[in-house]
Length: 160
Image 1 (tube, rainbow, N blue to C red):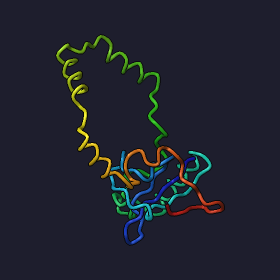
Image 2 (image 1 turned 135 degrees about the horizontal axis):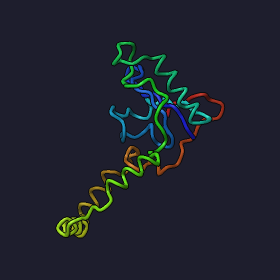
Image 3 (image 1 turned 90 degrees about the vertical axis):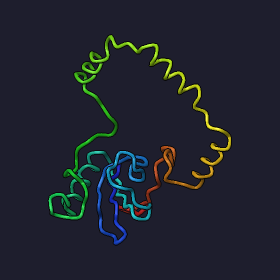
């Protein structure tokens, strides 16, 4: 399920528009601006990725970009571009392959990697503290474990 999302400031004015799937609108990873609380995120469900891009472009045009002096949004593009996941062309994949061909990892580097993996266990006390700190935090990475959010039937958008 694709959607377009709108992030709102405390006063209700929009400051960012994006296109996403799953929990994209609710995580800061990959964004250069901060994610607002859930109650200040507006979701516009879309039937396809193309529809989501069109909605994104329309919302950016409507609210305007701050960097161009034409509106309130922090977006740096007019929207409608990007992709769901990183996909390299065959040419790019070939270039990356050629760049790595013949590379050897030294024994010293291998030993350093091995040492960090062997001695990287947290103590029981530290693990307990980390667990308590994340309890109830719906914004922690991985939440909601890739499950799509429910959309109210018959509504064009909803605030999550």
